[in-house]
Length: 95
Image (cartoon, rainbow, N blue to C red; front, side):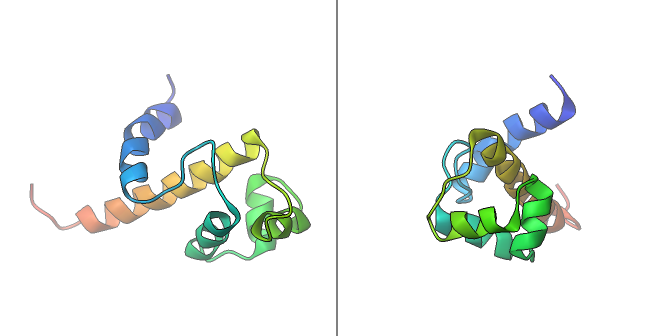
């Protein structure tokens, strides 16, 4: 098991309780919220998950749904965002 898989396995329960979408499901509003939380344009998100910008627009308008491989990429972005947020919150705390 690689580093990314181990990180995802550890963070997934945390992500679910933090309101991140499940890996196999993400609706149009969740995609829009993820993109905005990452401070990305549709074009930037499209480049990150390797699709066209018009495709991201269609997802956000609920005219099309992401394929499974793209959902995994989107969820990896969400998990990375969560990991960075948790890391920032933990800085300076003494355990």
